[in-house]
Image (cartoon, rainbow, N blue to C red; front, side, top):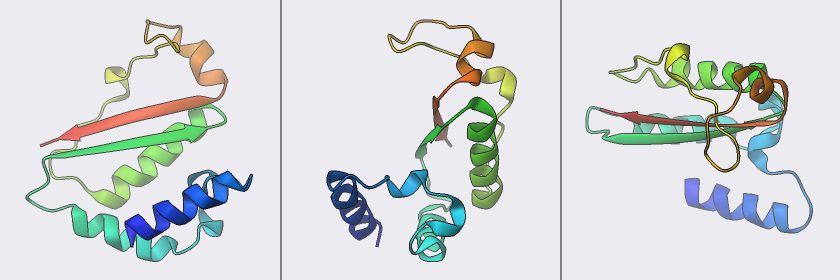
Length: 112
């Protein structure tokens, strides 16, 4: 399911469409099935999980991450916003307020 969704998403982008992950939650094709597939991957045997969230601004990215974290219920989840660092495109430290004001790409890595 995840491979098929990814292939369809890539094909849609090639034709100029929005990536599926940028659509509002209610417009994502097969959202319930995608959620179920991701939950299946989350188990006691999970070693690492990476999420990448693109958003128009930091507040939207935080809401998306909070939603994912709530839904996944990772066993060792201890994310604190104070642990988050802002970096620029060269991966150098950046001003958090400036980064959060514009389009952002939030990367999250979970390790058990």
